[in-house]
Image (cartoon, rainbow, N blue to C red):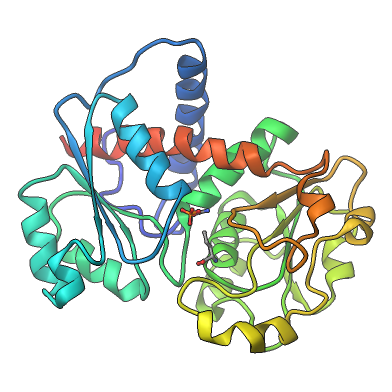
Length: 308
Ligand code: CP
Ligand code: NVA
């Protein structure tokens, strides 16, 4: 797609039409894959993955996506790369750009990926920062499209931490105009700048402390862990603050009869979500996880193809 943005750092950076095009691309790539039709547009291309935090889904889906598209992937954890020993981000970005065709980064501060992208001459994709997790929310939107046939009008609820996932959901709501009801405890609200810019586009983004209010008549109930990666030492404090910020059968009962429950995983059963709900018939979490693969393929095809 000509004119496709160089980087995917947040959903806000993309135009609504670009997100729609990625979702359409993922639908057709998924169909092709299910029918066993090979599609190898990235033959001879290499994806670099620099991960400073753990990952199962993001790493495996991006690597598999690259292989299915005919390319290769090289994974560097914090302990493998010189970045982990203090080599400057800007040096790593310029060197990696001489070898690979795109880079996926999972790191802590969003400023790290911003700096990397300023010095990189190949596309940079956000595989999760403390502030955003755009590729996960793209997979989630694909899952909602499959289950509900539309993204709007719908009521999507976010129960729990105003974290990276919440911020990317807010960006998505800004673009697509669905109702987004966030229930977060005081002190754990989403990023105010992200909220402000999205609310300028969509007035139906609300923030409450009431889980019941957010869940009421919802089409999609969404949650995530109480303590994200990098917040391990806050675990006990957060467990107290988030008590009651849980998707359980009572909360599910407040939502629409055909509501689906989403969680980006990994999940902590009986903290942010009960075991019966995540294992229950309304849970969409395994489809969500699968859709990471199909949306990553659409992202890679567009971004590496556009840069080539
Ligand atoms: N949902 C998600 O990003 O999972 P991983 O941390 O396993 O990549
Ligand atoms: N909010 C979680 C998401 C994990 C995929 C974290 O950052 O750890």
